[in-house]
Length: 310
Image (cartoon, rainbow, N blue to C red):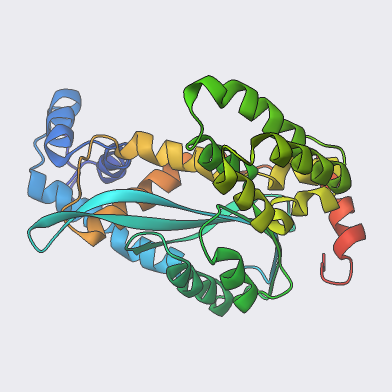
């Protein structure tokens, strides 16, 4: 009664098993859940075979053609523990999210490598270009050493914005607790200034006050000034969406939510499969353009009219 003729499984059950797996359930948990809900026994080996079918979907998705132009591309990495040669080591899943000319966000791909490095990002950007991307107008990234130079190597016309929130977070690591509140309030005067010129004056004041105590932090602001303040060259609506990588960090948070039950992964393939399924769940609602898309698009057309083809 449960299994149709010439079928080995209830219709739709494979999709349910994949959905359970995407939400972080282990094979044994899925086996128990299916038994309780449907009174149907599915072995852990069968569950593993079903979820392995996703590999073909991943290959097709990872090699699909991309649009010629993206207005913004956010890039970030997320670390997972993976078993390798009888040891558990950290590996990074590299993610890139693009904003297309339709105003909709899409995950351009995921790539697995060792600890985050600008050299691996070079291979990621090269892959993106090979799949049809000719131009990226703005990139939003963390302050990884050499990252902006790497982007310029592949997409020389891209405006590179270093995430201000990352800068604040990294700067605060070096500040003692009793100074932290005053220090962060003073630092806020820099990135909330109305213009780049006002921001520079605020940085100079900030440096005069704190350089003797936290010279490393001050140096970091000055060394990365051009990329930290690129957002000042744009209208407020565009500034809000490029000055931070919060969009992709929120996506990382959802991936963590779906994969939190897995302390470590047995293989590289298991990591990629889990992250891919988590991404599929997390991006189901990415069906509409971003807020104020009409205004944002018009601003991009005015600023990048010669490079932006609608």
